[in-house]
Length: 195
Image 1 (cartoon, rainbow, N blue to C red):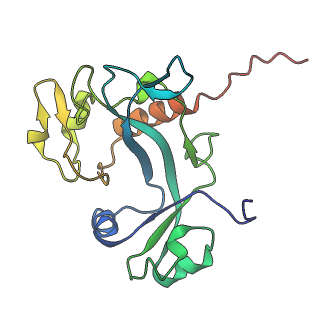
Image 2 (image 1 turned 180 degrees about the vertical axis):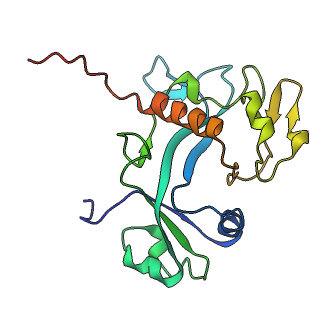
Image 3 (image 1 turned 45 degrees about the vertical axis):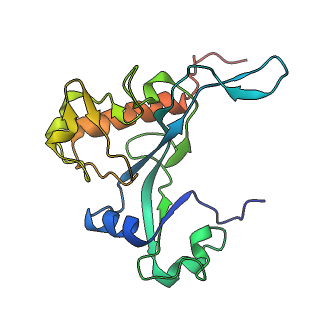
């Protein structure tokens, strides 16, 4: 059962939260969540298994635009969130990022998870998962934990550990992110026809 005051939220603490704070992440900023995925298939016996010769890929699987930030012991006001457990997450930088009601400039919710779409794959085709295929304009912005040396011949080399990569604000990055969100959400298109 979902509590009546539930909102999508992302919790962070310790060095990961310190990094986000140091980079100035705040209300209005957008989180794009990525992870390591591998294609699966059903075997003859009906069991789900990893597809043979399918390589793991980094892919986007969701988003959250920050609508409100709650820090420290104040997180206890959200009893449904794991970071409200102060016995586990005590600390002045224990933080919960609450989703905005709507994604800025759209009719989309301020958070969501994605269905599979090839546009959500970050990994460059036929490469290891940490070699990403990013548009060239990413070379012109700051990406935390990375440098210009991260851009190699034909790919972006993501650092091997970490998920808190903060990208400086840029209109092209915002458009790119919105395109990824729209590809993952795949809102139904209304034809205007009525029953």
